[in-house]
Image (spheres, rainbow, N blue to C red):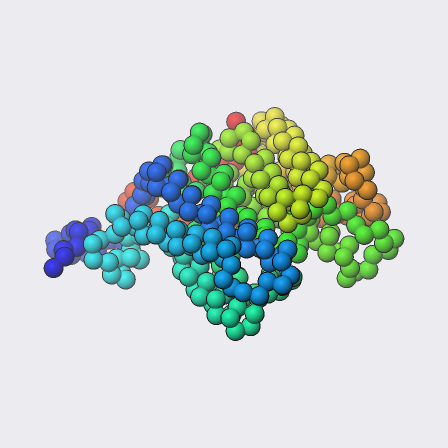
Length: 385
């Protein structure tokens, strides 16, 4: 008969004392463990990219059994095996429902939930395709089974960044070298599935400059293009805002979080048409980041939340303003009039401010027990140092 390893709760019960509320202790994860899950996540998201590209470019696709599905589902298996490997040394030999809930490291809880969503979504997806056929066009983005898969991918791919955050005290905010690469790649892999499944409301897969209609209708392709700027503003800002709450982002990290998704969406789904768009987005992000870092000390009198709201307001206006301003030089230019252009820039500024406000209000649940420490929140000035 196998014997379970002694735990803090077992010791308390044997000694006759009342068990204190237990919060999983911060778990240290080695670089090897983080990179292994990062590699499995890359495998998984690459499979999604291939599958989405196939759906978009092969109109007569009528089978579930495809090479790109093989890549994606083998990526799910790779992530599952990796998570089991990570949990194996951190759980008792005899795992019960209670011990699983109590002793799973906090950094692995969201990836574990994500794996459950992937398994459920994969099963539903297989059944759905065999019963109702293969989705095409807009149907792809509204498939119920795909929502499970996308949510699961986001949670699993965020695992390496969560493991990195759990491997050092919350007061340690500087990050560099391989850890910075892990943080950025993990965040990008978590964001890519959402970018893919919001292509119908995206402004980064290809130039969105208007149809040329002199007076676009309320429900029109022009309106959809304008809404795409709003959706992309939120998706590009959220990873930067979330990571900056935990770490002082190294120089270039915010730009990478914008440039990599922009290039991936344009090359894969825009067939490289309008390649000037991701190039311009990257250049504008570089300049915006450098200016923000240079001006950060001047805003020390403002509260950290206010600083981020100012950045959330001005950065999208600057970046998208550069894109629209460059378009007449490298493309046909914007077909919208002054009312729509100025309104669009105001709208992305309001959207950015609202996004920063919401993300800054997300609070970490305080740890219980004598070793609990108040959570720290980085501010713009510290991040820019």
